[in-house]
Length: 100
Image (cartoon, rainbow, N blue to C red; front, top):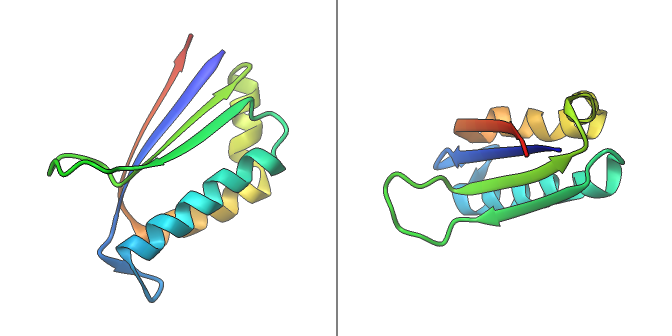
């Protein structure tokens, strides 16, 4: 099993919306992927509630059977739509993929 974790920091504003609005929009976009991409085994999206200066704003946790399934997810048109928004709204992104 492959676990895919992505942490995002968002810009103060982007696409005509505030950071908080874009965090909520990103959460919806990411959660929608579970419904649209069959290779996704598990997907959770969490909005940070802590106050640490080093914290990310939002995190994606997802699981896939193998690296091939993760690649199918990455290439899926719905995922690419989310990536387009991420490119505009995020200032920083960190990714970890690991086998469990």
